[in-house]
Image 1 (tube, helix red, strand yellow):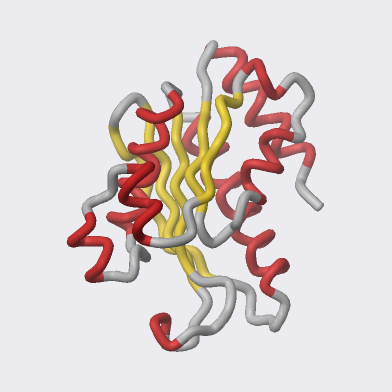
Image 2: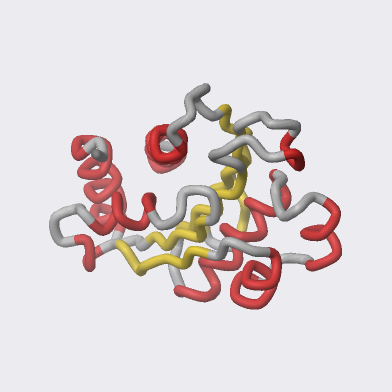
Amino acid sequence: MFDDKKISQVKDHLKRKHETIAVAESVTSGLLQAALGSAEMATDFYQGGLTAYNIGQKCRHLHVDPIEALKCNCVSKKMAGGMALGICQTFTSDWGIGITGYATPVPESGDDLYAFMAIAYKGEVVLEQKLSGKKTDDALQVQLGYVDDILNALLQSLEK
């Protein structure tokens, strides 16, 4: 289901630097947490994660701006960045990932499939990106595509 090679590379980078990561998810519903948690010796680098599906939970647990969240249905680069920063604080991690978006067509997205992801490092957002969802009726395939895109972006960020 997940790209074990990429996950192992993430693990190796983080362990080599003695750094940790945590994840705040919405659209991927815990799949990114499952991917990172599937690594051998995940407890050496993976702090954990949180799946927050609605605005109230994102504001309460990740401390995103509620006014901004309401304006964009909690789906924007700024929201993903806030989620990434919030999860770093909540889990005391060096790295944080935030992902929010749409895996199925809904009126709020204009029936398009897309997500915003952000990566934070040591209290600063270092990457914000819009991801395009795979055109399919299978939401799981869209979610898994987002996970793969995030792992690619994370590896690039770790290598800098």
